[in-house]
Length: 99
Image (cartoon, one colour):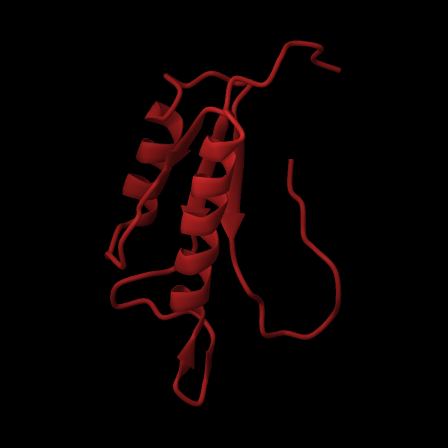
């Protein structure tokens, strides 16, 4: 296990732009994930935790660009944490964590 300190947190809002994610009526996943990501980034800053947002507005970015921004956020430091917000519509409970 890596015992180094966490460098910071990279916050991502899943989907965006022309990719709405899950849709239910007039509700779109991209709107909720952007709101959640912006709130998280603001709160982490208030707590003095280094944070970088991949995007702060509803924009189209490719997977390649999303990964580039994430990797560049803390100069590729492996001790940075990435949180990518998604609201899955497939049912189930809890959270999904991938290493």
